[in-house]
Length: 277
Image 1 (spheres, helix red, strand yellow):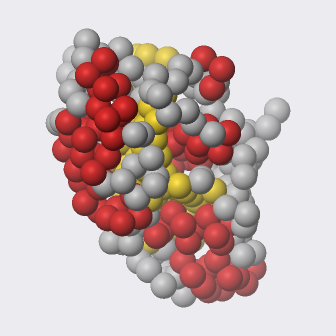
Image 2 (cartoon, one colour):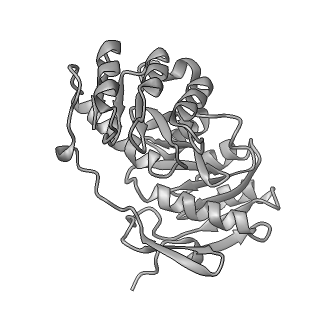
């Protein structure tokens, strides 16, 4: 059978030895990129994405993913689901990266990236075709192991519920699907802001949802205007909705299920934004 497209089956073409953190980050990057069919770039830093984008070409996807946050990719890990061309290699070699993961690399690309002796290049065959599959996630705790099924639930808009006066368009739904695929891979509390199929801001790893929203809005600045926001869990209060609305968000997709859902929906209606559970 075909080998699984995963970090354990990576073929290292060049670069330094992989570190503990590299392996974890590469794993995150691969799992994230398997969500998408079209040309996609994922940039991971400290186990969370700093940018994710789909494009007509892999070069466009890289540019849009990088644009999300131009500071964080420094020393980051990039996963691509298309081969690396000379043109893409030239663009990526402008910044310091730790690892580039792709299904293949052109000879010209290898010449360009080969000048960076420490840069780790990994070929993972099938990363462009394989979907995320049911499997078990295992974590170690002192004195034992913790196991759970991986979240590979199909995203089905037929199961969604529009809860506001304003309704989403077909294009909004497409962007919401993309946003949910992204927010699944951001550390909780997690929010992402997207336009079409590219992130414009990501907020994660905060102890309060409003803080994650504030950080993303602060980093995304004007680009957040007219974007779609996805949250990985319900809003416990209306505060994060107010922050998002102030930043100019047009729609929010979130799981719902808070005791204050009505208050949260009311906030969305007051601001004239679309909300979908």
